[in-house]
Length: 99
Image 1: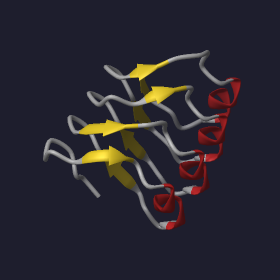
Image 2: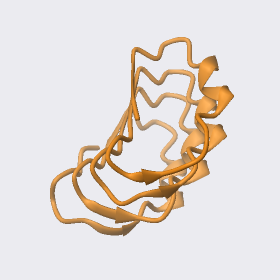
Image 3: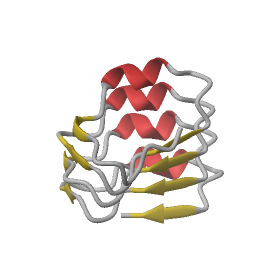
């Protein structure tokens, strides 16, 4: 699901965590606000999570460490704060981390 660069606004719905067969979630270059939902950590098949160039804030949820298939995670150019969760070190397939 690639929805980037299309003028979406508001928060990322936590209900996306119920799309357990989702492999790619691209929400780059929108005007998304709020935090990254911890529910996205339920997406075990997720390989690509692209959230860059938004207005997201708060910490990176440690639950993303449960996304065992994740190979790409980009969240640069947001207003995220806090430390990088140690749980991300469990992502053995991670090839690109862009914060």
